[in-house]
Image 1: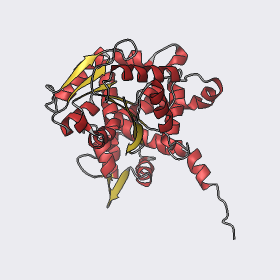
Image 2 (image 1 turned 90 degrees about the horizontal axis):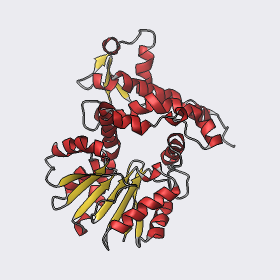
Image 3 (image 1 turned 60 degrees about the vertical axis):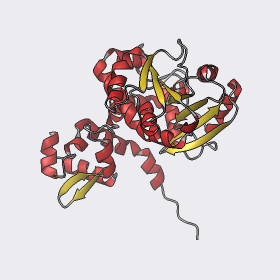
Length: 336
């Protein structure tokens, strides 16, 4: 007998924004930080967050059903993941990115249909504004954004530090380094290596503070620059993480060509992103991230490992390979 079809999966996907907004509101309210010191009973948690009595219990229990909270007796508690990644006091906090999603992208994604019809960004650009220009003008927002980039890159950074054959190299540079997650993790894992972080000058104090907190200031230096306008730093290995997807195909090729030109013979290029699977069937996160590039950029898009390896070979790289890292991220490596 044929299995009777039901619309549950369709309805779950169609209402998925309900769960997303519940999580984003919990982050905005500081719920997970409030539970970092230990479980709280519902009324105490409601009072701590300043919530109305009407729906607080439903809100907390929905987060349990979504896997973001646990209940211990009559008290609510963080899960291991929410405690590690959503407590604002921890260096592993990824909530800065979620705060940006809540404040900006949640609304912009409401215009996805318009973006699909027009091919144009749906963010601040519609009002003639530039998100990154405004971000760089506000030190507090910039710090929060760079910390968020560290949170989402930390797992991939640690995997790159362990999986790539660093024993064959002496120097490296992270192009578009943000706060410095990759340089720090590589330097911690390989004491003989020296590295650089390459980013806009405004990033420097935040990068240097982060690097110094690990005692790596002597081995990991900051080099200011614009990766389109300025030469890329000279090193045996260049890394670009969550960079290429911001740009159109010609700009992607331009950055890869600049990397190839500055690398020594035998040097390596590492690109890590939410690489889409070659069959374009299973990495929904990578495909949705590509739609996010439609919302956020004039020409950016995400890509498969085969796409990136092909572009690398076009600009001159010889051997290439694709390797999973952690979560949704993989790296594409090209050897000159």
